[in-house]
Image (cartoon, chains in turn brown, purple):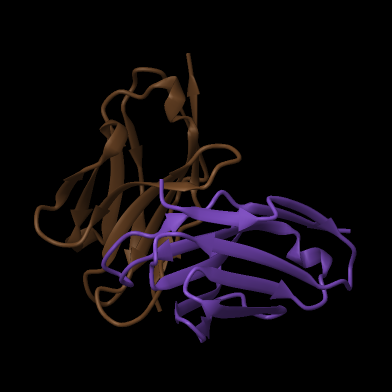
Length: 114
Length: 113
């Protein structure tokens, strides 16, 4: 069965600083990989996704993520964080074949301080 | 934004009562999902549907049932609500499983007292 680990429950960064949120997955083959963001009281919005090809993917709001097969990781990065980036971030995986829905990590809450 | 409407958005109910949550989509997507979100657990799949009258269980399906009689509607029923089912419930849709991303509704906050 697939699983997703987000090691950091809560991260605090200063506005303007860089950000990296970690995601590791367990799956026998290369899965489809996603990052979602959830603002308080809202649903989830897709930031970016990886299916195949270039391992560095660009998303919305200036986010990017890099797929590293050797490390089973799909870390999310942003070079300069804005106060509006404060939210909860979820990594998710899906099988690249078959009939299985998304499996989510437990999330990382990002706080941004001035 | 994808056309997904969840109703009600908030509900308080008593232990032992039946509760039905509705998810309505206007995107004509084939796949629909119900997740629950709890602190420290992220989102966990309850049930999903891959077509009208075609459903399957997820990770945390005990105590829940679903029905999908039309493409646009996916109902989640708690036959006899318990306090452990207090949660935020999210509906999601996708067009082709595992090939496109899932789009999420705004959520329903359910409190069982």
